[in-house]
Amino acid sequence: MKLTAYIFLLVLALLLVPAVHAEDAQDWNTRGQYANTIGDYTNAITYFDRALALDKNMASAMAGRAVALNGLGRYEDALAAAEAALAIKTDATALNAEASAHYNLGHWNESVTAYNRLLVIQPNLPAPFCTQGAAYLQLNQSADAVNAYKSCTALDPQNFWAWSNLGLALMRDGRNQEALGAFDRGTAITILNATLWNNKGGALLELAQYQDAVSAFKKALNLDPGYTEAEQNLGRAMGKSQIFTITGQNTPVPTITRLGTLSSETTAPPITPAAPVIPPTQQLSGTPVPVPTRTTYTPIPPAIALIALLGAAGILIRGRDRKK
Image (cartoon, rainbow, N blue to C red; front, top):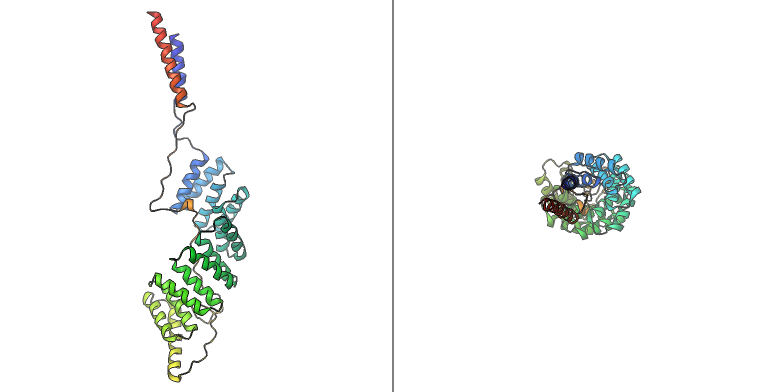
């Protein structure tokens, strides 16, 4: 009986040995998501690849991989990964990665469509509206761009880039007075951005407020003395101001083809893209959330293990008593 009890205890002990460092797809996926939050995209791809090797249908790992590839500028690969994730499951992270990849590849229509799909799922994120507005401007759809930027500024009123781009969209739509109001909102948030002052100067020049335009362009150059376009715009504004002062008449202003920079080029104005959408699950709040340590496990529940141990102990005690 004693030998049987010892064998039983030995088998039970082997069963209770924890499987330390057990790895599964979710472990690697968690590590990949964490790496994305801190911008460690190279390692993130490694982690997601290991997760997908264990579970090829893990949509969150495939979507996270698309985010990392976008972060590395591998937009074609990111697009393929995002589409693979969406083939498994409709996911906000994958939709955002798809839209961002299309935008960076210059696929303006596809980017707009992808952002529309994303905004159905997550309508309260400002960044998708801002980037969609930039895509609309590239498509020369100024009214749609205005609406997108208005949604962005409503959700993120302290984003001065959004106000600046809203101003550019309004100027493109011929609404210069409203554009000036948008630039005013931007400079109320920060007075330390040269592009914003240059764009504001453009609106003032369009409105024939030449002295104020001169002041705006000078502020842009004070912040960035090497800002060539602001320097050129200042020269134009000063020339208009002198003509107006000498003649006492408002000389017709030439058509401005590059809103915001007022050069003679006919290309669209440079638009500062909004930041990529960071899904809420990947946003940082002060310090990164540490990667959860792997949990160990036992093949049988603790309560059953305890009962088994007590039973084994009882067998040993009875065997000892019988010998006595």
